[in-house]
Length: 361
Image 1 (cartoon, rainbow, N blue to C red):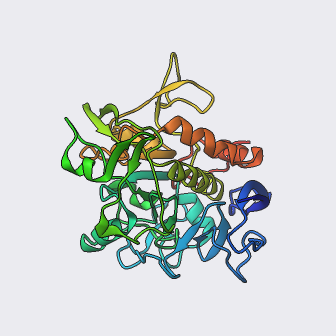
Image 2 (image 1 turned 45 degrees about the horizontal axis):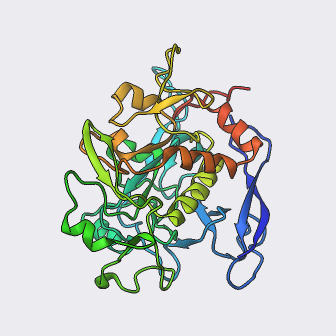
Image 3 (image 1 turned 30 degrees about the vertical axis):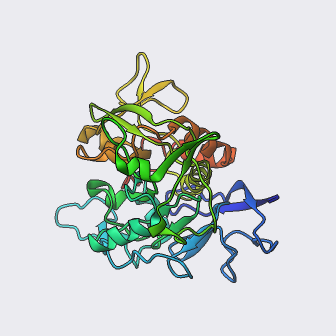
């Protein structure tokens, strides 16, 4: 399949954001019917790679199935409703007008002020269709699901907050990545049901009860690395099969789009700074650092902007697990972003959700 390059407009950030229209170059796939995906943000028709933010379309460069279309999953029944905050800090005796920053009435400029985290989960179900079934049964929700074949399902407009990560819900976007998850000890029947070794390495063996559940027909997948990956999460050694190459590719495209539409989301992950550093508890993008593999203390969490795992938010979670290749994901995400988009991220660094001060120039 060939590639075509399209401009992705990074719209005005609002009263205190830059008025400059930024451009993001993304290599979009030529879709199966050979049709031109059209101009980014064109609402007259949809070609299949757009996400929806406040009713507006933004290209990603990877196939997106919307909750409103055939084969989609609607997560809008279980959301947090409207979230408001004061437009300015209240002064005693002075009235103020609240802003609606998440919810069905939220406007793009306000939502951009409020979203600064992209939370990664594994679904522990192995496939997005089953993940959705479990979320519905538990009355939970998430903005995106990423299936084994690289198909991204958007489950609700990003102006809505979802029930996916407790204290992160109001300031984040979440994605459930199809993977049976991490475990301790030797292989169990569950891992043997989903993965098999042959002469070519390790391949996915999707159980017959999920036949036909993937968007890509006859998908034959494999983990990006053949052997289970071990690592420490929350102080315990865990094992996990890696995500598929298709998932890594789609996730990088999705992250690049989100970091551009929401420039408070930094294209980075929680890392301890190497060597002397200032009061900021995380490594800066141009500094070396090691992955933080445990829950963030609350005061540090409040300062964090960027991609992070569910285990960074909650002590009782270990997803997305030890197998996720954070450096690969962030490197590929940055490659898909323009210098202008990365520069806009830098302007909003150290100004977490709710901050309305002018960006650093």
